[in-house]
Image: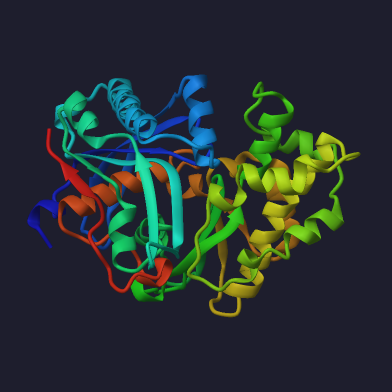
Length: 392
């Protein structure tokens, strides 16, 4: 392990824009401790929203709308500016000069992710694409940037996702308790950390939609005036459309064993059109309630079927925007009686900031030549150093 990694007080920024595609989350952290037991202190967190026109473009492209290489190229550089501004903003908030940063880790904005191989040109190929040009971030901030984290895992035969499980393992493992870290972003995913776990014993996977379907319905039926169901209040006014939910639960993804990952390609606009927008006679509240139940039930069923038979679990630790949805958390507690459900805030990982914190830590590992994936989680043939390094 490099001596430099053992030193305390390294400053890093993590940047991410998730599947909601509404802006850039930025976390400024102080890193210390050894590689196998890092210490992370959050110094500042902020969100820099995208302009509405950019949100519309991103949602359309990620939803499968025809586009051009020129439009994607322009968006790549434009989002590089937005990511740089988010990094500068969080540094100003904490009174830190960007040139003091050891590294900026930028996840970028995913506009396409195909973790499973498909045939093209006679060859089986997986692919992923995150935009937000890191060279622009490095030029504007004067800091070293690590970006494009997912591609190295795909090149090693993995699905490129989920990547946060290594950070969950490093920060949440316990000598006597088995823990599951549940992140409810656009997609929901779990990291299973048995008591006294070694890295090769950790496993994880995407369970299905988190907030993506709920948010898509709210955006659609409010013509974009609302982005999400605040605290689950709209869903609480509706009833589950059970036959619709049963139809969705027959999708092959939910029966597939791990490793598995998913995204907007499966649960985006085409999914909404097929299952929800054509549902005549149902109220908006009923549709949003059904989408909320879909998230809760697929998480609970994934734990019951794929996790509990393989590991003893003492805690479910929840993060991500979905942790603010009171109805969703209430349903999880009803579906998983006897399992304590806690917010990641209790473990020094604020629910909104956790993913941005994770990419600051992953970037720090990449800078020091340390692997950032867990092969048992992603399906990669080996542990690999993630990302590409851009010097200012």
